[in-house]
Image (cartoon, rainbow, N blue to C red; front, side):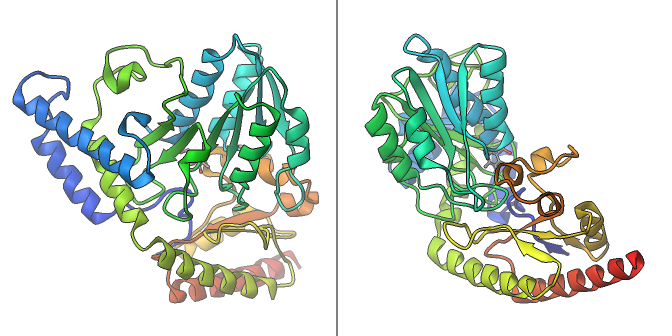
Length: 380
Ligand SMILES: Cc1ncc(COP(=O)(O)O)c(C=O)c1O
């Protein structure tokens, strides 16, 4: 099997898997129980929180455990909008966000009466920073941008964005979806108020995430209930899962630079090989990009046809963001980049890991080349 869809999800690290099973079997008590078994379970979860905080250089009280980045994004954006709505009802995001951010903004606009601006991008996916500066107003309470785009891999200049916010309205909160950045590029949480992360993108468990919330930022909780997560998220804690986040993160941060260099050389090799194919156009930019993602279009070919033909060869790739893969329209990111229709409609996404080998890549390229030729023959 050649798996090239690591942006969608990653295989579970075997060490994480082993320890998780042991926690499930041996530490099942409710972490809010007053007896020793519950206290021990809670201790493990709190230890995890402390370790995560240490690795991310923040305070343990600033880490909230969630069920994944979709929940973290919802919690951050709606929680912030509800909390600060008396200051203003204007919020800003970008045209290329993951659906869990984009649709949350749409809901805040359509159901809760907030005014939303979606900042545009250029043909390389770079955010229009002048437009952002011109949109921030006195009543803007929140700006949310992703760090690394999950479809084409463009990297947003979050430090620059923070400077713009600071200059235009210093009390506007800044949330960043850092899902595709974690374990891949350096992260500095001092410049943001809120940040979302997911474990299953870094070889951890599905249904596991965290939200970083700066001490000076308040949120209206979305799940009311008990005292768990400082009242931010009611419900019996998923302790084994939360405990595993620390180990998952430690493993992901280990040798981050070496892993990055390996992936970068693979990315450059694949890009160079794909550029030799006459019908292929690369959509991932050559500047400000994450090498973990490579988006390209096979012009004139239906992406689903190529995906399934590759699947028959046991090569697994994706057409666009997996969370929107059942819709028939073109990818939101490519549409926002205003690419030609024939490019936008024929896009494929491959994504790499430090586990990806040269042999896998050569085999994938071989199959893709053969498939493109055979489909062409069929068409002709
Ligand atoms: C950029 C980005 N944000 C958010 C998410 C959602 O993460 P999760 O699956 O943990 O809800 C994903 C994953 O699909 C993503 O790529």
